[in-house]
Image (cartoon, rainbow, N blue to C red):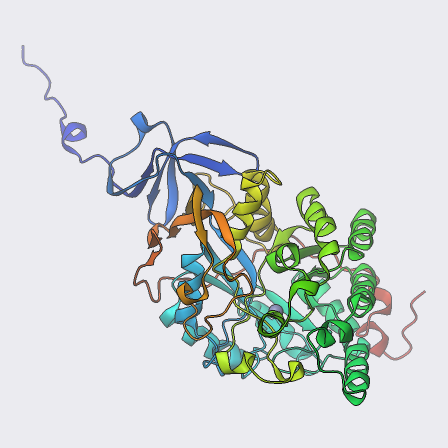
Length: 489
Ligand SMILES: [Zn+2]
């Protein structure tokens, strides 16, 4: 009797090899934390579990005593290329993101040319795909001239649209309310989200002109020109138009404590809105910003008085404000050192310092790491059609991860920023506790111990998969009333 041949193929086949294994750390999602090794294969999370079950890997990253978070998604950055590369470009901007634990940046359309057509989008894509070290989403511009481009830009994969109700860098004119209404009707039909700079342009221009005529040019002049009412009026209008049309909106850089109850009530009514605030509105106080600091911190909307900070932080923690973004807005140094406050460029870099600042609030016991994961990654992924793929550490999700050391103490120093053309910060000298020590973009380590790896072109464009559209009041939409004899009843 002969033995049947033994099939040894299973024994000789090599064990599946992961690309990267992060070992010894604690995984943190918005829902909780647990100790686990994380393995990555082909850019996706392939394994989460006990070290004894972890696959072998080509590269092992030791994370003992560290936390592994979903990489931050910063939905509000200005990378400046094309057209304004004296301030920033896709290399410097995404290196700064990698240094800051940010694995995806959304780039605003107020570049030169603005991202308002398929041609302009293609120009930006060409610059980004050659240089990006982290993933990116690209916004299209919504204004009076671009209504016909909303659908083509959506099909071409923009992450959302941006509407400047208030003027800022790039001086794109705020569209009139009729165009905004029609734009929202189109967006509502497509289900796309529109990020809104909510300040009232006529008000801020009028007040600035009156103040200039009166000879005001002091450290607090800009703050006074754009007092809270300028933002509050615009927020109310944006909510009204969103509620009527069903357009999904996202309010950027919320700065006012008085907006919080307005947002809470609107959300309770079912207005399809999300809101971000930024570290500068939680850390800085207008009354403390004088001289060169006032020029560096000049931004739109302005840093408010310190008494407003607590209400914003509370709203961020309780979810009334959904997420933390940065409004990373670099400029050439010369553009921030002009004599008159009115001539100094608005904005400052932030993508690299946000995580350190927010982890400092965790260290102070003001929020949990789980809260930070929600506001920095899970909520942005949900709002912009990336949920499931990003914002969560789970098998099959993109391996966009950040390893943090919550005990790391260091001062923020402008000279160390990776935004090479824009090395100034309003946080100079502030000591932070907690920092990213490794940033992983789709399985590739793009930053380790503060050193950014050469990874130009590794970043990939992210395209949204939004929930089904839910437009409202179609019978009286701008398109509907163009039909001769159309009756809405
Ligand atoms: Zn901005």
